[in-house]
Amino acid sequence: METLKYLVGYPPHVLARVQALIEQGRLGEVLNNKYDQLHAVRTDGQLYDYVQALKERHLRQSVPLGKVLYDSKLQVMKHALGTHTSISRVHGGKLKASREIRIATVFRDAPAEFLKMIAVHELAHLKEAEHDKAFYRLCTHMEPDYHQLEFDMRLYLTHLEAGAR
Picture 1 (tube, one colour):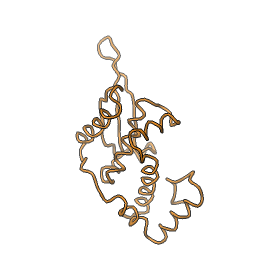
Picture 2 (cartoon, one colour; picture 1 turned 90 degrees about the vertical axis):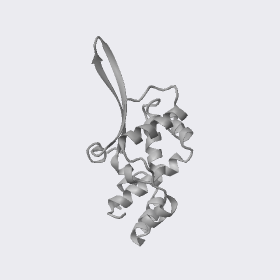
Picture 3 (cartoon, helix red, strand yellow; picture 1 turned 180 degrees about the vertical axis):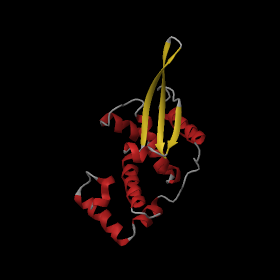
Picture 4 (cartoon, helix red, strand yellow; picture 1 turned 60 degrees about the vertical axis):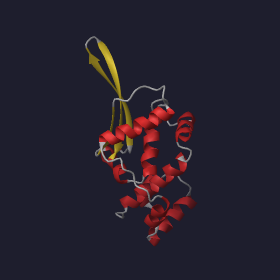
């Protein structure tokens, strides 16, 4: 079960079911049947607008975003699918803070629901730094099916890693 690195921590019966789907060659089919809608968010500008719209809908009072972009190095180098950072720069005599969200390019070609899930996850970090109850409560406020989408996104990554499409 070494191929299930994205599913570490899930119960053995869940892992066994996923392993069975992989061995039967049906994991991709199951995911395609459930998530057949791709998104049209192709460029960094479109991604910024997409994430900004989510932020305006759910986190209107939070700090402004300076940048939102796809990052091709994220998954490999940082073992992350998205990052939220606060960058401080000296601007004249003042310290200016800028918030950036970077999302792994694997989500450029992913189903629409997975892009929304990772965007919601990174937006939640604007208010909650740690992955605790308050963080996940905020995620489910923005996307009620957050936990199911996160699990299915992990299945999707497992499927991609197996070399299938």
